[in-house]
Length: 508
Image (cartoon, rainbow, N blue to C red; front, side, top):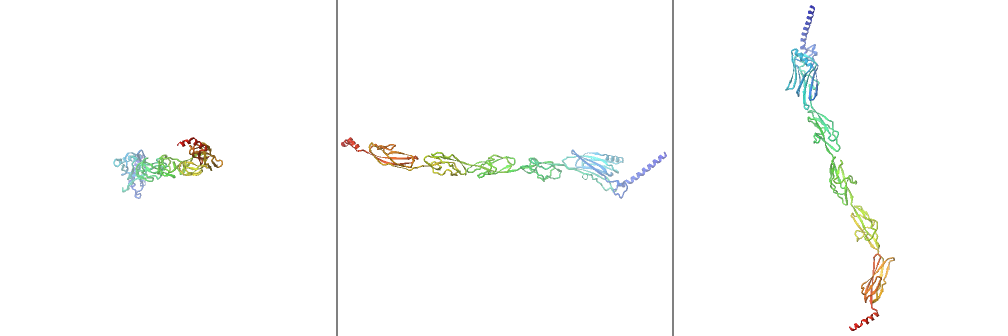
């Protein structure tokens, strides 16, 4: 029993000496000047806090852990504050252990959220502590379209002997400040084209340089970017976008245009040029050009091409073009009239401004020689078979004939015949060999002398008459001659007359 009491007395004496030593060392440990203190002050290093942040569903959770170091809780204060309201705070295990120890030693640690400044603070007083691990977690609610920041700050964790130095923790995020800036997605829509730029991200209150990439669209020219599919241009590639809002930029396109020109192609009065819009059908002009001697057939795409379009037709090609008038030359009928003959040539067609070689066919007419063609039935010959006809006009050509004439001569002598006697005229006719002819006789005074078709003359009464002798050849050529016919009484006739009628004269 005495040995036990003696051992307990030794233990108590050691504890007392240890307590005295500890109370002597604590003030020196608080100094930051290592030359003025010794021993435990080498372990009093500034605390290092690890800060982790998680954002989910418009909520920021900031977790604070002490990873190493000591702090002097004489009047230390933890602060967490920002532009948004703190909705909750969770005290971690390390801070709970610290609080328990402080409270056991009669010290105080308190947490408060100031509704005006929206700050979270933990104030303590006491000695030096090193409780590493989970300190606390604060939750902040925010609007994702607004910019905000949250700052974690620790003051007076370690004090110098003169209590003038304040240490601030430098956390791993943003020098102690967690900053949130809303992010906006800038999307691009080629709006019918292709090659739109990739989406970009714009930070709140930070101007964004829009992509320099230009989309393409066949048949269209890119004009810029609009904020709606049918809106007007508001931005150009490479421009600054400053609005704090997400947006889809739509390409604005101007359709290409094509000039449609017209060429009268030898004529006149071509339509004025027209403008055709890409992918929009154009109604071609209704104006029709003119050209003397030609008929307009339509429009071709080359000077010598075939007709492809008519006036007022739809032009749908997405290309500029010159349309050339297509002309068909007018034609004229050249017909032939044998004009009393036969075997006239078939009609021919003469093309405008192109010479026509007249038919070489020659008509025939008995007793006539063909002299050529005239433009009227009794006109003079103007064209010969095989000649060139150049007039741009329809025409009927009439055969011109010349009668074939033969050499025929006639001579008839005067005759004297007695009353009631006959005689036959014997004209002297000289004709070319082989020529056929006929003879016709005619009396100028049939009451004195008559003549028949054979030239037999009869004396009808005393007097004179003229007999005309007409010779007509096979070509109706005529030759005439006349003779005088004298009718008289013979001696016997005179005797009879005197005997029969003389007494009448005597009486008288």
